Amino acid sequence: MTPLAIVHGGHGIAHAAGRTIFVRFAIPGELVRIRVTDVNSKACRAEVVEVLAPSALRRSAPCAVFGPGGCGGCDFLHVDAPTQRSWKTEVLIESLARFAGVDVHRQFPGLHVAPLDDGDGLGWRTRIRWSAVGTTWGLHRYRSSQVVPIASCPQAVPAIAAAPQRTGDQAIAWSSADSAVTQVIDGRVVQGGSKVAVEAAGRHWRIRATGFWQVHPKLADVLADAVRQSGATSASGTWWDLYAGAGLFAWVLAAAGAEHVHAVESSPISVGDARRNLHDLPQIRVHHESVDRWLSGESAEHRATSAAVDGVVLDPPRAGAGAQVVQAICAANPETVIYIACDPVALARDLATFFQHGYRLVGLESWDSFPMTHHFETVATLKPDPGGLPIS
Image 1 (cartoon, rainbow, N blue to C red):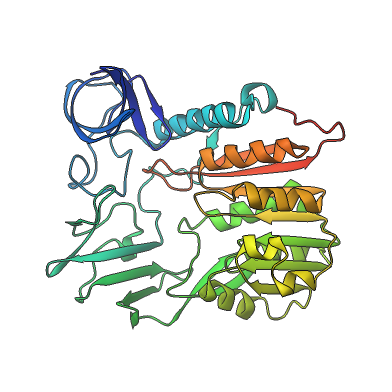
Image 2: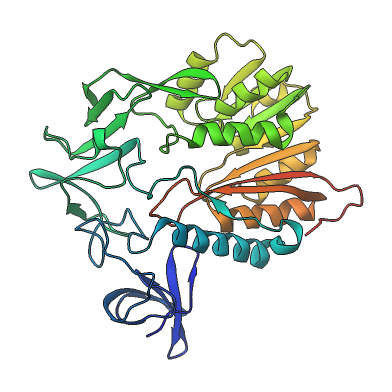
């Protein structure tokens, strides 16, 4: 079988017997033998088990458990970092065209998924989760609860690349801004402190060891700068920071001059981190609430806030914000919407809803924040369209 292209999810796409086949570990143009792993009425999933005619792009993977039946944490260890970024750029362009009608080549010529550093795509992950497999540790197989034994992960920074020495069921390892290691096993801190030191956007942060922070060491700064440049350089009035996490973008908005920032987050750990890290900024109010409930008006806290909003930053989970949330944002009529996305299809679907409600896309940037995987980060900026129609 010869895959034709790389599509969303990091798969090579091919066709046979009237079905679409999504093939892991393939390179377009190769002749490969595959094993089908999953079948439904319209499509199949498969993985390469033998390369009969390899591409010139193929290389030896720098990990012993990469490949069929192995760890599911990497998709692209068999090609170099520039090739990965070119594939991700194609996926972004195709997703926006297919699901949002955006002609990227015309509206944003030269757009590409940019590198965050000059490295080879290895040794960047500052946080890693391990699961027990027997008496040792490992990482999950692709789309499976099964765990593959592994001694070290090439994605991780050297300080945390090796599996934990202590036993347990679940472990989290962090490498902090000062290169100190924090390790949590079964919810108990066994190395380091209960909070991890990180630095971003010109500010020191302390994040709970069981909390959330971007795993690429450069991504938080890059996203903070993108938010500034996308319309918050001289923020004023009232802004919403939706899916606020520990409050990085709320801080950026307040530092830029916003008079009121409402940071909305559902995770109690992240809410605690945000309130602790932003306690010196009275213009920021952190709301412990789901975004959809807060926007729906069911929340007493939301009803107590001003109805007028000048700008919105949203950083939803991988599934996207969804039509209900997007419609509620549009109903508030903000002058600027800055959407941070880690999934191009979810982004495109939400952009289509924004377009239906009279917003246009005015800015688009993307970064390879998760090398060796099919994931990447994109920031889209929207403004109301005076003509009432989307521009795409």
